[in-house]
Amino acid sequence: MILSPIRRVIFFLLLDIACSGRLFWRFKDRVHRLREQRGKQHFLMRALSKSGHVARPKEGFIHQPLDHFDGENTETFSQKFYVNDFYWDRPEGPVFLYIGGEGPMSETSVLAGHHVEMAEEFGALLVALEHRFYGDSINPDGLEVENLVYLSSQQALADLTTFHRHISQQYDLSHKNTWISFGGSYAGALSAWLRGKFPHLIFGAVASSAPVRAKLDFSSYNKMVGLSLMDESVGGSNKCAGNVWEAFAAVEAALFAGNTTEVGKDFDCCETPDSDDDQIELMQSLADVVIGIVQYNEEGGPLSISQLCDIMTNKSESYDEELEAYDRLIKVVEIYQDSEDTPCLDASHEQTIEELSNTTVTKTGSSRQWYYQTCTEFGFYQTCEDASCPFSRMLTLQSQTELCPQVFDIPTHTLPERIAFTNHYYGGNRPETHHVLYVNGKIDPWQELSVLHNGTAMDRDRALLIPDTAHCADMNPAKAEDRPTLQHAREHIKRHVAIWLKEAAWNHMI
Image (cartoon, rainbow, N blue to C red; front, side):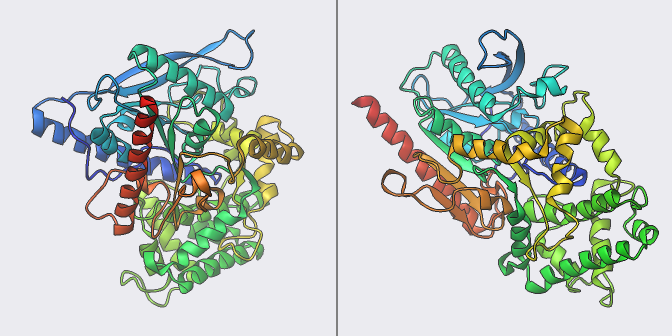
């Protein structure tokens, strides 16, 4: 038999959106690999101790149209999915749909997480669908520019409706089987949009850390990073944020003074950042270290905000109290590199272009696909051109958007119109939907693009902002060391789901 939900696994079940540099992608990929590895080890230990054998969820592939909106296009691709029917109260139990985002999906999507814990309690059938063009759900030529045109949130929602029909047929489901969708980050936005566009299929949706509003210049992301570094409830302080700013200003001053060789050695760069583009790349890599720590606070990164601030404010006993902010940033980067086991720090713009231009399909590669979606639908470019940003003013909108024409031949002047269409199509962060619960962490920079305020009438209780909490933390399995605010939030989410299921059952009786 499949064991009961995993209680103490420390890992995310999804990849989190980012528009930062190569370093951030590697940072988050490693965090997810570590968490998944720990989760699988814990799963195996509990399964063997409880029943003596390990049962696995069902894995399958569904053939999807490459283009749902062109009936003359007969091309298809294979899309991966998972099913866990152990908890299902047949035949009328609900269906919990876990939506994949901008990265590969594994069986843990239906084995662990708050949605799995709720599935056991509510007798739900667990199903999960990997996002098109990520992981195993992509054709060998899928990364070619002419095929990336089929990578969009609209096509992804159409995939989910086809998957809904497939599961309904395979398990002989009826209107009495209530569907609830779950997703985090970009997939959280998909969860909300799926309910909004297809309310006859999805009765309710939980949208965790969901950036439902597209935005070209997402300067407020780094503003929120700065505010989170000041948040005393998670170990931050004004001094910490100020010292981070001071450290980046010192690096920038050294580069402008022509001391590129010294800076390259100080931060163990893979190459000396002599050109302007390489210096921007270095500043992005340094920012990525801090961004990653904030976004993954207390969820498995090399440092927490509290530990970062202890170093940056001379509270850590491990380092000389006389170190300048510049030198303390070096120490933070060294800790990151030790955790990553990387020989040097990225500082080559040419290498970034080369990696984003690589059309070889791999199971783990995701940056090309996601950057394409930022150019065509979302923006999300995390700039640093105002005083609220704790990093370098070298991180401009131009430095990020210029990759769109360089890599995908998408003119930068078309980006505002594309992003405006996305907001017009989905409603931005003022959607006219109900039965959607928007969950956000107070220190998560992505909250700025989500729904933070309750609506009226039928939608008066739709926003949940969790103090002291980072990106998508509510989706993780419960563990003893979780903050009380996070524990209470999960109970709040469960109450919403319970109310939806009762309302749906009442509707079925009418």
